[in-house]
Picture (cartoon, helix red, strand yellow):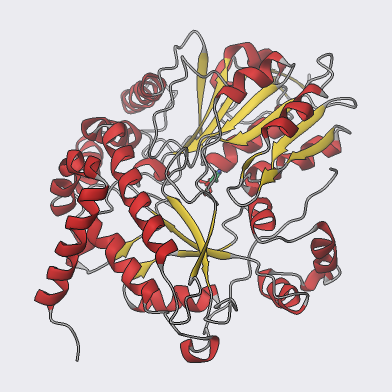
Length: 499
Ligand SMILES: Cc1ncc(COP(=O)(O)O)c(C=O)c1O
């Protein structure tokens, strides 16, 4: 017999009492429950459980209203002209630029801020402008997003060497000793770039930010990909001073999409060389003289027209986060993640076998709210994560599955070897996540891809409880009993190169 709404409510309340006893810090985040009932009420109105904050955060209603009001009332034109509509817009853009620098505690004497389309565009700007040359190195951690992995193509094209710093299984943290040795290998006479995510979008691991200064002292410029870190953590650029920082604002506060940032430390600026120029980036360009002079500072990196109408929404979003307090968000995410991890790991089939395998740390120490996992049947066989996503969707639960554009962390977590990856590549043009998964299953029942549940500022206890109950529903289920998936993911997977 189906449970009544009252019964489910009672079950949630009982579970929450237990949760609060284990994670008392959650009580201090009650403000977010108020906002959930107002700013994010659409979640409960629609009975939706949103657990893809690492994919993108959710916006508060008031952000949209404020942005709408600004656009409704302002006469706003393309910036950088002298007319009133343009001047008004330029003022909004520049004020937002200052607000972002302030938010990250980056003094304008130390950093410039380039508005980009997203984190990937910011990463590409670094890749194409960094003076890679023969003898220089590009070092990056295994758990980088593909938009960081892609920088290796710029490095290789300029005959720099590319190396990956490995992670340790099962926690997927950096092998500190190995990294130290790899950092020592740089010749400081050449331009060397070290890139790592402040927080992994695969495992949720937060890498120690002390590596930034340590790498710099060994002759490396450091690129900190902060895209998955800043939505739930404070990044203080007066304390940690990477040469480059990349992020997307929608991951922090949901709206706007289409705006990201590249922060460049002023000391790193003179070394960068843009490979082209565009409208907006030059002080002077001549057709007959075939010459151009780039504009100084951020203007040299902002190609063409900015997404100017969206940019003021960034300041609105930052103010929203500040009104809650990033520490409050961090504490809430920590408590909910801790409970979720403990409960998932405790799930057992009737025969006593674990139902869930988690890729990454099992506790909340130096990890964020991204929980990546796979489900297994009572015989230890993997359940198809795409089918799990599909079934979750039927219950209004939004998860992410696949490799999350983070192939290296997946390869390590899932025990895929270089040989496996080379075998996959023999599929040639036929390779995609689906054909690769099939091949890995045949080659030893390995998995390629996983399920990701990520927690963010609007998540509440009931969301996590509902997800957990959904997962518990796979007790004693098998591939046959859960049925077949009705969609395919043909997605990213690239292989390690040059290491
Ligand atoms: C760690 C990390 N870096 C970079 C990106 C790329 O961000 P975008 O797709 O907004 O360019 C993402 C997106 O998921 C990410 O999680």
